[in-house]
Structure formats: C-alpha cells, structure tokens
Length: 298
Image 1 (spheres, rainbow, N blue to C red):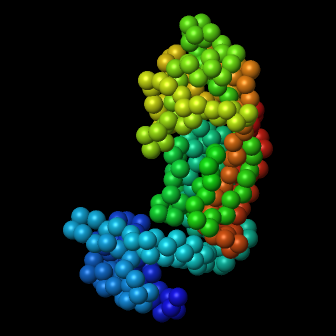
Image 2: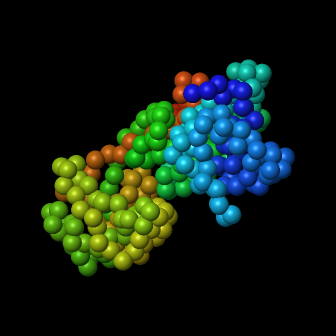
Image 3: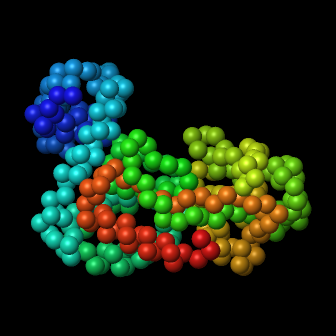
C-alpha cells in the first residue's frame, strides 16, 4: 500500500463522494468544484493503482477496491477528528456524536440523553437517527450504532450491553379467534404481523433451534407498525418484552409464547474507531450502558 498521507485531500474527497453519492455533492461540502473533487480522486486512483469508482452520468458506484479502501480509511479519518476532545479536556466535551438506535429502544433512552447527557455537555452536538433496519455505519457516517441482534460489518468493535428477552404477543380478540398455541405446529399455523428486512420476513426461531417463516398478510419494517397491527388483531407478532411490557400489564396484548422459549437477542453498540474512540463518544456510550441497566423487563 502506498503512503496515503501524501494524498490526504484525495482521501477526504473520495470519502465525501462515497457518502454523498456524487462529486458535485461532495464539492458543496468541501467548498470546491466538482472538477477539483474529480481530479483529487483521480490522483488517489493513480496512487493506489486501482479504479475506485465506476462512473456514469447518473451515479457513482464503488468498485471492490473502492469499497475496501473506504472501509479502511473512514475509521482513520474519524480518529483524526478528535481535536475537540484533546483541547477540551475530560470534563468539557465537545464535538459531534451521530448515533442510531431502534425506535423501540429509543423510547427508553432519548429522555435521559436529552435531559441529562446533553445538559451536562452543552458543546456536544447530537445527531439522532431512529431506524429499525440495520444502518450502514460507515456509508451513513454514524459514530456509533445501537442494535438488537445482528452484528457488525468489517472490522467493527462490538460491545454487548445486555441480553434482550423476546416474546410472541397477540391481542385478546386474536387469541379468542385462534386459541393459544401449545405446539410449534399450532404456532406456525397462526397468521403473523411480520417484521420484514429488505422485503423478506424474519423467521421465528425458538431456543430449541426449531423455527419457521411466519405467514401473514401484514408486513412491517418498524416496531411501531408491528405493534399497531398486533393491537388490532391482524396477527401475532414477535417483540422485545421490554417494548410491550405496558401492553402486557394492561391486557391489550397477551403473551402467547408461555409454552415456548425464544432465545434472547444481544443489545450492542458498534463503532469503527478501534481502540482510539474519542472521549466524548466513550462517555456517551458509558452513559447509554448505564441507562440500559434501568430498562424494566429487559
């Protein structure tokens, strides 16, 4: 690998072009011209002796070599973006924290984050993304993502914060019509409100290793939509127990998985800073970890 420090402007132009999807958009952020961005990327391609983009009139598409370089370079550039932490010291944190977490978990964290963390460190800028899908940490420029289940991508650092209990729920009306299942055969025969990822329904997997792809007429990509469908009796649904604890307590949803055991799912934080996480981000992650312990019925 050549000495890429000789082409730092090209690296920055390359990363911004990937993140924004075009040379013109990258140029606006960098306050230069699209042709200047194109030349910088061209010099970088000459240096690494590889084509990084497949260019067309409509879009930029990363080559395999471009994707590999992007995943290597972004964490390094982010590690350099710690000058605010270095100059501010431990108690006066400053700089950006861009994070993502599932909407069903955010309900437990946003109030203490805004009330306690943000007020304690007013020079920290928070950028909040709520998404039930698995966001691309690198391409979407997140500092840290909090995720239930799944894992990281590439050489990401993963810190498990908790194991989350799972449950299958349905409305009282649904249970009256279909009865409560006592076998996996009966369970798999029920209609489900299904959580879908990239258009494919997530399978239901039991602790025994048995599983099935649920059938149903309602497909959702958010926990909010899934809850609404279950409450209206449109199907059974798999949820984190903590996310439906109130509905279970008041009786608007019923646990129909009492004869089964679902494996817990890890709730984790994922980042790309390696061992050189900025202090502001470390303090933030420690804050979220502490708040995790206070979630009821986790």
